Image 1: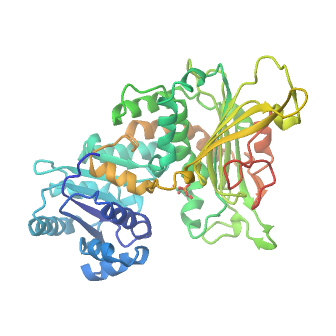
Image 2 (image 1 turned 135 degrees about the vertical axis):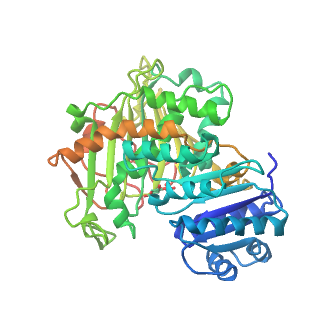
Image 3 (image 1 turned 30 degrees about the horizontal axis):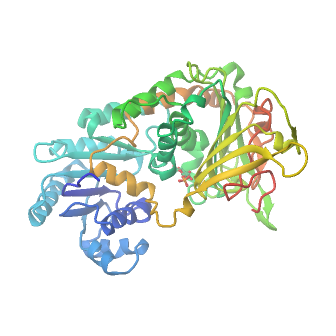
Length: 501
Ligand code: BG6
């Protein structure tokens, strides 16, 4: 385990939801495991008028009340500033210096931007104006939350602005999917076993499916979501990262540059979407009102903050081709949506059939080619489906499951994504953070889709009743594959259309 240097975490947007729900609990967990350096301090910054005491009380909402949290609370401080006012930054600098003196802490600082995106260019600029980007007395790192732009142009502008004030190696663009334990396990599964790599290519893999479904709708985020949609909210970032990790070549070492170079190569190899055939390869959907467990559930257009005539997609399914030596001829199907039957994220590697069928399958499901399911969440684990003999006379084949579930490692502690990522940043490891060129490349992939949807108002937007697996058109997308989509259930090993909901 790397050593953690003494530091101060400055959180901009400290009165917001993300801070109390995710960041403070993650920092608390790290403190509890004694993984934060000593001394350390967390300085919340935002416009809301508050003193240290009030901030400490507010942050307790998502923390247990015990001795450790009382101790943790004593590391919390707060400063009220107008984040969009350049004149307030000299005061912020003074407060940081005062804290450093009191705590005898060196100048190691992490700035976390948990603010509305419109401040992403301003805050770094104002920090640089008062020299808080200079590393003479310790590291200065900047964590930025998605969205990294709303399209290719704004993503490029944002990168340009950030790089004006901080160097790339000071920038940590967070994609919380990369912080998930099971996502990292994908790297270990692939590159620490001699078993998979020889099979991990177009010769043995027929196609790959990546599903990230949510049973929730847009909840209170209708205003944001209606401007964003599933393509920007999930596909451009989280799903692309998963595609990158499944498809990348083995890196020479596990470090930020090596991994991110390999991810970039995957994005560079994704075939540009043919906008003349967009309808065949990209399906967009929007949930409509339905009845779930006897309760009427509103459609997307009836949600708070959503335009009643909105054409924003709450579901996307698409087929991607990766034009390189490893993946030529093996399509990747990805889908994501809100108000689907269950919350699950998983990667399904569908192997090709055995070249010659010697045995009878006991039913059609038993004739399935091998599948490797990598379950990111929930019921995290890995499942292999293979054909084995039905006991008794003859040679009947049945598809059986072999699985490993993280829950079985009862002693293992699964850190949350934010916990892992914050610790990595504190320790200066950007491996699990997105690099600027990767973010731009991922935007390049989705931009033609955004443009076509915006320019062609007649492009189909398929309705699907809330609580179902998305529009029928998404089935047609994958119809050429033997068994179509896997319909996962809450638990890893069950699938099929009928699960407990
Ligand atoms: C966020 C999206 O980035 O990821 C949300 O903005 C989405 O809309 C969330 O719900 C999903 O994250 P997770 O970790 O619950 O799969």
